[in-house]
Image (cartoon, rainbow, N blue to C red):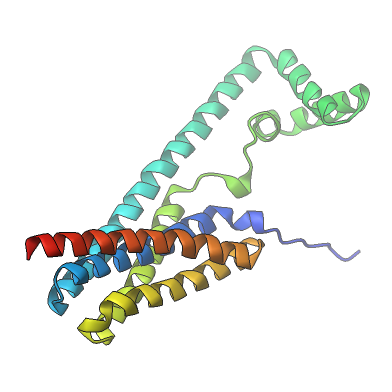
Length: 231
């Protein structure tokens, strides 16, 4: 019999969320900073220095932030599993009844639910309770190192795009060229993220570009305000 293989987008959620977050933040934060500095002082060296600083600091910050936050999730998962293991050791009958009731609530008859619960408990009781009671699954398990490396890498790539734009265009065109290029990059990111995640591409594009344009606009306004005040 041929095997029926299915590929679901949920299996990508662990790295896809970190990748989209990193790339989006890299584009938006660096483009916003470049535009803000250019609005305050139209000096290419200052603009590029700010952009490079944003890339380096942002990548490190994303890596550290993702590692710490996802590690907290991982610690919580392990603590819950340890608590569940203790409960299985202290009251196996009660835990078997609890698992049975979960299957009854999902639509199985009491007799079949009991049979399923007994067979799964005999095979791996902790794994069964982890899935059914704690909703812990392999595809959505916390992976701190993967999240940190993915976010740092995609942040660096995203940040390099507006920085490269600022390097290539005339300094007088930075205020409009970088935001326009950034919006194009963000639209592409929204489309790729939506496509990879199996969702609607237009929705992803609109969501990413709207909030990012708002962030860049506010940053440019602040840069222009302080630039005028300093002048």
